[in-house]
Amino acid sequence: MKFYNLKDQNEQVSFTEAVQRGLGKQQGLFFPVTLPEFTQKEVATLLEQDFITRSLPILSAFIGDEIPQNTLAQAIKTAFSFPAPLVRIDDKIALLELFHGPTLAFKDFGARLMAQILSIVGKNDPITILTATSGDTGAAVANAFLGLKNIQVVILYPRGKISPLQEKLFCTLGQNIHTLAIEGDFDACQSMVKQAFEETPLRKTLKLNSANSINISRLIAQICYYFEAVAQIPPNQRSELVISVPSGNFGNLTAGLLAKALGLPVKRFIASTNVNDTVPRFLIEGQWRPEKTKATLSNAMDVSEPNNWPRIEALFRFKNWSLKELGYGVVNDKTTERTLLELNELGCLSEPHAAVAYRLLRDQLQAGESGIFLGTAHPAKFKDKIEPILKLRLDLPPELAQRANLPLLSRNLPADYRALSDFLRKLPLSF
Image (tube, rainbow, N blue to C red; front, side):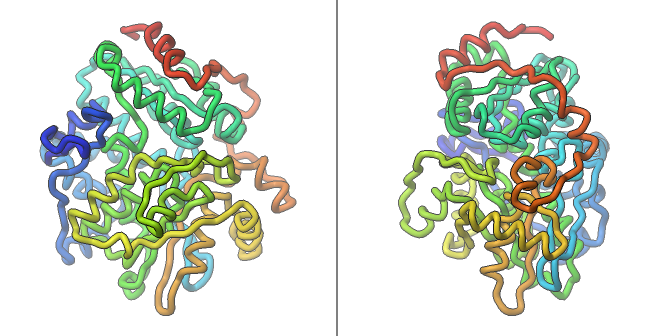
């Protein structure tokens, strides 16, 4: 399988090169030159298999023979060592729980597979992972790469704009993990990361790579749990299935659409956003007009310039789909609070991101359809927000409890690329 740069179609690379480089020239995203597709019979067979077994042919469709099958199978088994259960809310709607990994968020799937793949293809050369996070990516990446030989990680995040417990999960680790609290929003962090990749001497010296959903390995890993979701739906409900995806940087939705392109029976997707609504406005007006990022209860979705949108446009062009087929919607904080209360009354303790997705699914589901919304993080990660709304006390799971009282090891930096460049230049070249 070849991957091309969305900003320069003449730049084509192998899967392993795309994983190792992260971004192409001009900060371009890599995307498959061709989109593989399973037959209906093959999809039916896959849906009868278990999560680990099924994930091998799904990932092989994009990786090809660049990684030996037995090596890839072991990487999958190591990375996907936790379940993704589907929990019924009512007779029409179910929640896909993606927070049973070590950092209690869906990003554990992509980060852990990427770490395994880089360990296989990196040939033990020193690598510096540079990434930005609006919350959950930081913890997933830090824990996936913690202690790995010849890999150091630098994570930028907006100071004061992620939950305290999200911060504790990756800013208390030390070792080969460096965390930088930036005086700005997530888009500022993401912009600084992109600038570093444009500084060619620095990129080559540190062998920079990114672990955001910018990296194609993270994206294809997420395809696997969409198949797992549909496998848990009765076959007679699959033809009318709608999936609502909490959307910030739009990597999660991109993975779902790639699953559909592979042949997964999903009728339509809903791009569920908070008031950072660049994509919904674009779908209505036809103009891309990012606005200043607004802080919300669903902080991991506080993104005004979603990186993965060009991949979605490329996918729709390739498949000759119309963007009018993509559902969308915007949920503000007051409605998010009401929805959290509603879910709690239904016996579902949820969190703001899943609440946004549930609300739009509930409101847009049509007669005869069934729906799944994605639970992207454990509610306890948002304890400080949820407890006052639901008027209850949340116990911390062990993954959070063991880090809750540890000191933060982060360094504060202004939202100025020169400060990041100076920091990176002082990093060790061997570790």
